[in-house]
Length: 252
Ligand SMILES: Nc1ncnc2c1ncn2[C@@H]1O[C@H](COP(=O)(O)OP(=O)(O)OP(=O)(O)O)[C@@H](O)[C@H]1O
Image 1 (tube, rainbow, N blue to C red):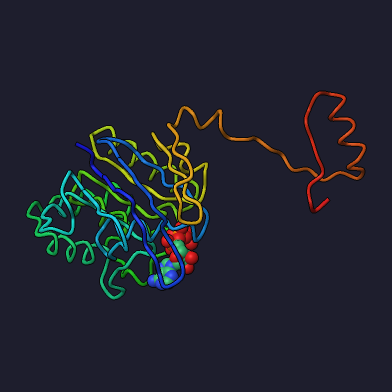
Image 2 (image 1 turned 180 degrees about the vertical axis):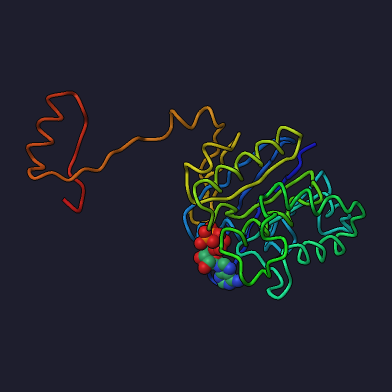
């Protein structure tokens, strides 16, 4: 059984086709990197996967079940979509308590565990409105992870994190994946995804233009270095003589 299965997924906003006939199959335990430029259609796809907006065409199956038909497995799903929403006047812990009750969770340890895991202990009693962007993002991730869901859907979760934070979150996600969690993660930064994903889907102007296993990625990426020199013509000549392909781009 696939964890996520989507056939001919399309979303139109008036004249704009934001998502164009995408099909996806995500296996259990996979970390699927959904890569695309700003405006490619990542968030729209994720919103449809979570039932937040209706596709113009296509159905979503999570754990083999159609989410539009009495779907009762949302407690197996954790998500973070775009900017984190939190109650600004509540502390980090209180925000997580609200979520704990909304999810009808019972094991009180889950809150403290996730606070520790996401290194939010120092901010436990800080109101959300005073958190830095990075820590706000951690709070969003804490909500997504707290109930240890089988499927995590994360829209650009590294946004706002510093390099050390990115590494920490990556480690947490890899660890979760090793324990069997399936992760669907979007990003517009190839490097971020390449270090994490087991499979990558590239979305461009609403279309899924390529899917790659992570091992294939290294061979597929065209490595380029853009340099500016005092004499570009001479540099091209010199590189050519040393069997390195080079050309002068549009900006000279
Ligand atoms: N509610 C909406 N109404 C009209 N157009 C929308 C709506 N939501 C998204 N779009 C458009 O759909 C396209 C895809 O947007 P989407 O937010 O899915 O892209 P994205 O890949 O997530 O980009 P980003 O990384 O910037 O968030 C964009 O052109 C966007 O302007």
